[in-house]
Image 1 (tube, one colour):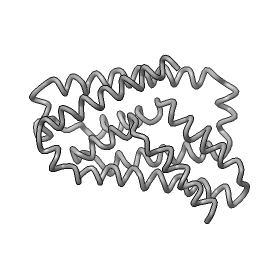
Image 2 (tube, one colour):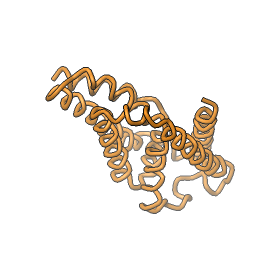
Image 3 (cartoon, helix red, strand yellow):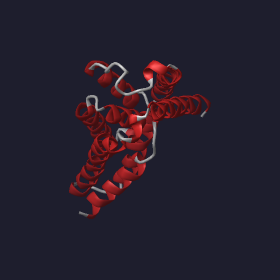
Length: 199
């Protein structure tokens, strides 16, 4: 139980920071579009990455620096494009209200979710390197418990974020709130992209 609690604590502390993926989950939760599938995709992706990290995949990535470089460039390109979409939406009055915006098809929503997850180099640092490094202190059943705790943290966080966003629905009934959210998300995406390219 101690190893599982440590895994949960490490997992939740790393995932709490608002990043591109979390902002997307929040936005879709507010729009109530495909929330279950988006949350499940994020959590399952994290589970795979955490399992790889706890299983020792971090050493492979360290041995082949081109993997990180390619993901950095791909992730930055995607963040710049998605950020531009959000900033453009914020500047178009017709896109401000939740009811006015066309619903994103499930396939497009899952594609965006997968891109924001798998093209984000930070997710590899968190799951493969950091969680993997802490998990390396354990062996056997304790390592499995640690990994299970970290995976549980991801499931708890994403579903709480996706469905908890509904509590903010009254605030986002006002079109101006959507403008500020889209401006914030767009600025965040571009900041993360610039950070990736300059780091």
